[in-house]
Length: 183
Image (cartoon, rainbow, N blue to C red; front, side):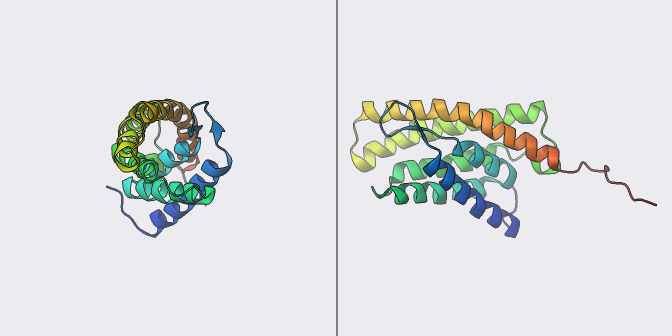
C-alpha cells in the first residue's frame, strides 16, 4: 500500500481540483438524462494508480462533491460516493504497477484497464443505481440505464485519457541507472 504523505496529499488536492474543472466544464451530454461523457475519470484513475486508493477515494469524493455543489441542485450523494469508490478500487487494484518508477509497459496497461473496467462497473452499474433507489427513491429502470451508460462511456474515456496520462507520466520518470555522473 502506498504511503499517504505530503506528496500524496498535494496530488489528492490537485487531482480533486482538476476532477472538478474537467467534470464541471468539459462534460459532454450522452443523450441519456443527467448522464455525461466524462473525461475526468481518466484523470482520477491516473491519480489513484500513481498515489494509491486513499488519494483516489478522496480526489473522487471531493471533486464530485464540488461539481454537484457548483450546479446548485444539491449534492447527489449516490454518485459522489460512486466516484470515491471508483478511485479507491482503481488505486487498490493497480497498487502493484510501478508507474511512478517509470515502468508502465503492456502488462501495466492491461492491469490498469482491467482495474478501471472493474471500478466503473462496480461504481456506476451497481453502487450508484442501488444508492439512487435507496436514498432518493428513483425508478430502478431509469437509474440502471444511467448507470450502465455511465459505466460504458467512462470505461472508454478512461481507457484513452487514463492510459495516455499513465504512459506520459511513466515515460517522464528517469529510469534507474540512466543518470550518469559527468567527469
